[in-house]
Amino acid sequence: MTECKKKLYPECDGKIWLRTCEEEIEKPISGRVTGEIPLWLRGTLLRNGPGSEKVGSMHFEHLFDFSALLHRFAIQDGQVTYQCRFLRTNAFKGNKAANRIVFTEFATKAVPDPCQTIFSRVASLFNPGESFSDNAMISVYPFGDEIYAFTEVPVIHRVDQTTLDTTERKNLYNSIAIVNHTSHPHVMPNGDVYNLGMAVPKGRLRHVLVKFPFDKEGDMFAKAEVVGSFASRWWLHPSYMHSFGITENYFVIVEQPMTISLNKMVINQLTNQPMVSSLQWFGDCETHIVLISRNTGEEVKRFRTENLFYLHVINSFEHNGKLTIDICAYKDAKALEGMYVDALKSMQYNADYADWFRGRPKRLEMDLSSPNLTQIEPKLLADIGCETPRINYELHNGKFYRYFYAISSEVDHEHPGSLVKVDTKTGESKIWWEEGCYSSEPIFVPRPNAEDEDDGVLVSALVFSKDERQVALLVLDAKNMTEIARATFITPSPAPKCLHGWFLPDKLK
Image 1: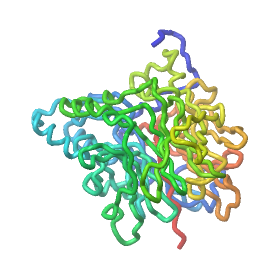
Image 2 (image 1 turned 60 degrees about the vertical axis):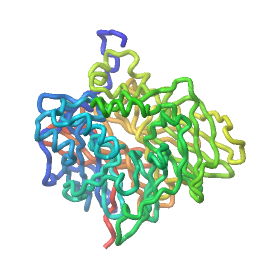
Image 3 (image 1 turned 120 degrees about the vertical axis):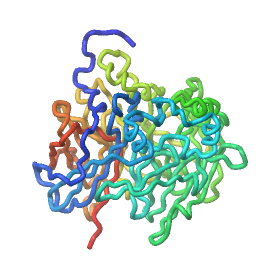
Image 4 (image 1 turned 180 degrees about the horizontal axis):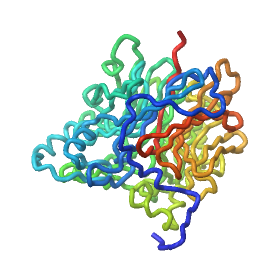
């Protein structure tokens, strides 16, 4: 890190990520509305993210370790209410009871447990859902009428979408024998849910695609099935995958050179070390894009591209004999290092920090008639840093599309908390910003009977650098990125910034 006494990124406040919610809001509070929220916009915006940076006198070391905090914005008749509750995971309950960190997280080592012997640690290796922390603080997704909080271990938690109570803990290893999965499954128009994970059939690790078929009356998890699989090109170092793409005929997997060392992971489990040291970056290796047939479940073809790191797929689709996948791409995996608490605290004096988040939206376009392992060159969609991308998901997920929306990922941008709209056809971008304001992932809600892809609104949760006890729900016109309305709330304790969420429209009565 380059030492410097000058504040390098004066417009950016990294401390908004380090807030601790000290008082939950169980009973909904009403917001002060400015502008006019469209009366057709009715429903619930649920959000998930880091909610507490500490337990007792102990502090977590990485953003991904913070205790999961759920947020609920209920929109009806032009008014909005807000609640927030901690997800009642085993990790949260155990830490709270002990008043210290007793569950090892992604990058934080727990205090030693005198009751846990080497034999119990070995036994835990055979039940992956119970051997890792179940702190599901990344995302929320619907399975039928139920909502679940996700992280990348196979334990998910059902959440009451009205009260935010944690109502069930489900270990998917018991349903479908997966040892992990992505934080971003795909929800199809018919209600089916697909996710990408890893399993160990016949003693050999494979990446697997799992289908949870929609069942209005039954249990989607009881009917889960593996519908595709493929072998990792590095069998002792499977690629780390946070999301994936889906099209009409294919599952689209970006097999990046950020990997998980299985040897290190086992050692870490036996010695109670954080998982982060199991990650290994192969800086000299290409990235593979793997196409898995949705019909046969078999690997069809691979393409090669430059060495890159990614977390989020924007969208993928087939068009005119080609398959396209758009992603938020980085030149390396330094962004993960930038989310350590110490890195966030010292970012203003680290001249390299901004470069760690210099991601760009890139397009990988593949001719389906090309030979296996054809080399492709990424195309820059827009020269703007962006993350947590969202599209008109209901109509365009896995299909040809034009627009996506995201938050700014660049800490040295003039307006680092801005919201971004990118036109993938022209490369043009529009932004919304407000000084001292930091937006969350923008979720597109279509206008009733909309004809245009971008005819609707964006809803985004806001936090503010000058008032840590203020949170707001922003409503933007998705066409021109202008503010329509917002609801502002004053919270009894600091309001942390959130990561991912889902909008649940009110059902027609």
